[in-house]
Image (tube, rainbow, N blue to C red; front, side, top):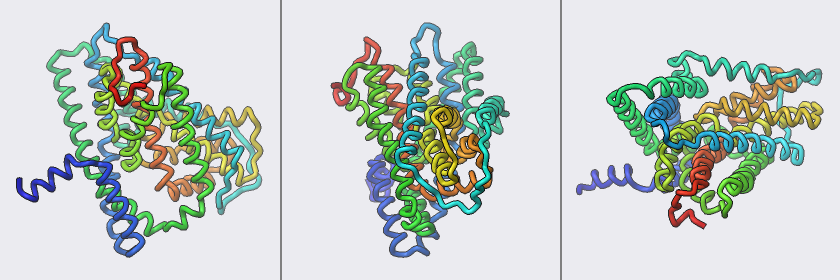
Length: 412
């Protein structure tokens, strides 16, 4: 094999984690040595994130639609228990975020703070937004990355196509495989994209921008670690009644690492599907549950929304009682279900939660801007938690079945 072909083979089939690590290190070095040159490679990062945004909604649409259409009556799917774990995990994450914000309150630097703010109800706006997202035009849902609308159409079309001919279902499977192959190709380009993203972000914002919000970052990342290493293992143990940590660490190692750098739950679906196959999970379950989780299972997003909202509330001196804090947990959980499966999606839903406390839109958008400043670490950690939890909870439900045979590396 010639040297160019060896190089191409290594790039396409070599360790993605190693390649991403090299891209990350080179990006940091370039930002430190030559900030001007680092800013010039921003296009690499922009191309990568744009490619993820463009393909992720289509991926969710075809995967869910094909999975439901090909489901045969009488086959076990176990989607309901997976959904229950998704909901419990997301709400539990929101509670952890709220509790940590009371124990370790954060403050923000806001320029449009208004001391005359009075609380108003915002749960109706959240529910209205979700309902409108569900009935969105399917083409607009795909174009605007409205994953709730995409999921609704995927489920509806999948159910309608269950009675289609075998040839039609075969075409759906072929389209699903083709879109998955495109996503895999985009993910293989992640090292270049991450090199551009890290270099340009550090050159523009600098490490000082991150250090200025070190406390806020510590609260956010600390909450997500608690979810990953405490809440999730407890939920998995409740389901499988044995040591959950071999499975937890397997999902973190093989799913969370790639999701950390791609920053897209939807784009990480093929990684999770491949992991599910290696774990010997039931295909009828994971083929639906994992794409579904990439859309609605957003524990990390619930943490982000609740922590940043209470940071704004604390900065403005608004009093929060226990019932309101519980309501915020519910709102954050509901809002998290509407988060786009691409980078930065949770930040755009913060205004829905801040509206609960009567915080005006201009202040809420300042909070969003702060989120984007720290998103280099916040969004990556959030996505790693979201995506790895998709396959973790799906695996837990499958492993609870009597006929399941676990691979040696996840058995206890």
